[in-house]
Length: 370
Image (cartoon, rainbow, N blue to C red; front, side):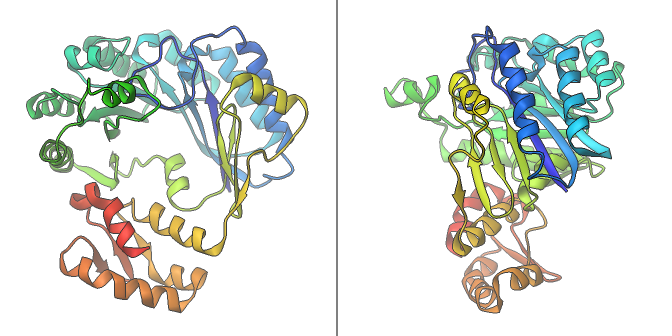
């Protein structure tokens, strides 16, 4: 089984914190969508197992109408074997939301929405350059439910300068009841407007104390509300995990189509050009596996640590021994002893994992184990 990711790189505006590839010019949209369909066909003989999740990311996939989404899903169904319970997610901005649009998406085959709420404070939304206000975000969640969606995720950003814990708490409390909440710490990426402001000294990152306070608030408030903190940035009620993201963390092959999309088949990775014209030219020529790299055993080992330790389940030591040999696992156990003593790691039933209340320092823990 494998997953499909489709990158829709069109936006009405570029958010100042976002470093995903996108452009505001939509003139080439029709040609681009045709290229995505052609790319899907080009890789059919290399990905012949069952598709268990499909994810429309961006950019702003909700700029596509339901007919365009439906055409892409029909193309996938013609070329690949799609599981009967396939999770099909589309990222949506509240400013495109309406009951009619969401119902059309649902009828086209989308069965899960990821809605970019980010905050329910208008001042914070303005700072983030969002095109919606708090009320519109709440309407979007309501519209999704009225349209028939039972699987909904809401994105939230914390670690924002001037974001108080009380404001973050109000947002989280209002969102309680949504099946899935993704909570991300703001990162000032170099290639973004915020990153450039940071380089000029015009914007400062929040201090460590604030980061910890915001993280702990998410972990504790959502935990008390019945959410599992099952991955560093992900909280789910009633096992409503993102099946698509779980594939990334547990080594499932995936095919990424569209400009800047990444793919993995278990042995190698490859990625498309982060430019629409270059991408379309490559697909027109029928070229496969651009910008590829094969993973050696050391890289696969580090990847295993990095992905599995992001989750509440952590590392299955028996699985690790089978894949990488007993010596590596013995060395891992020796390295883990100080971390176990400090309780940054825990061991239970043959698993080695980071307790969710320590996810904020996961990168440091993983570095100690590599």
